[in-house]
Length: 506
Image 1: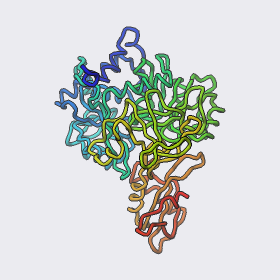
Image 2: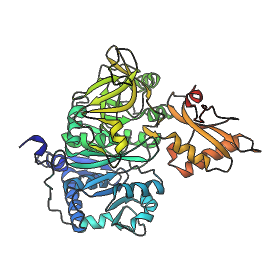
Image 3: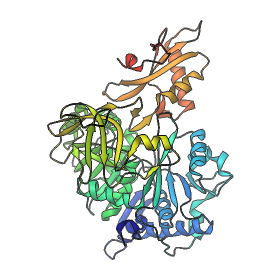
Image 4: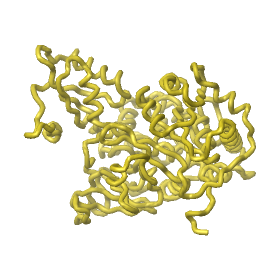
């Protein structure tokens, strides 16, 4: 039988490898509820798999997970895959409208949500079985009670390596998220290529990722990597504010830390750093380019390097990275083992060394496709190659990030569509026109900046700037709000009326 037809279930692999006599009683997860052993996580996953069977959820159907970072997320994610059912983790800061779109798009047959997220899902939860973790919400049953009543008998679907295992949503140029479909084989490949091949993760490591489990980046950091070797993961179920991160540094004493540049800047500004005598051996950054000044400040304050790299939802985790002991500030590093890169011009020809072009990548973790997005699939998936949408050049063998190929912004590691923010601004009674571009904050990290043309007889002022920012915050997920609003008499446009964003960026 060929490898692609071989029976393989990623959840069973990650769980069963940790049920040996020397691992089953090791601490797998530490969360707000305390420590959970590998045996306890496996039992919970078995219960959730049987719960799905009891609700007649068919194989390959999708279920929505809108969960904070706790053991329940891991139990539900692995339990669903073990049963041959496809979990769809989603951003916990989305609006009710965002959730309604995703539920309809993925055709979710069941929902599991934390309390705050369940309250935003009540409009759609009436049509499918719905469960809430840690709280009471009308229309939602308790997931804890449901798991307690379900059988803990192991049940593993006879899935195959190339069979859809889970979806992760990523934003597109229109602002509508796209469901990237990943196969069962993808998870352990990331652990092999990056977790072990670059980080050298082992059973004695304690992992802490400020990037959440619903991100491709956080999923690898907090689940796949530690579970692949029997390590321990410390989870934070709240927003990664500096004081909360500092508390995990002090109480859990991690050896591996994963963040994004915006968070590293916040930690340095608040002096919320690992205490003297910390056990950190490596810190990792992804999601957006890490400014060299941030790396230097962190290195001086903490005494260890940050390994900057780049990955994507479509490739599941990092495929270019700096290496321990070989960090080059201001670069993304070199290809991760298992991945091949090319920089091409607009005609698809490879550009000479030193010239900027479009980054293409191929490797064993590329998504199967976007769900129901033919045009996006044709633009992104090019046979065995993925067109990343990033601009790069190579200097002395190192890959240097030059920006996005389109107008999408990456804010705190999350893509933001300028069009979506502009549409929110245009809903305000004072706004006639709006354009949003990326601008650098004090730490040289990209944040949204809005240029606004006001309606006649309305004067721009600091108070109106604040009101517009708060209007967007109330309309969209908070991270999408503009950090600055500049009032202008007109927007630069082409002869056909298209906004010339490059002029605003300049």
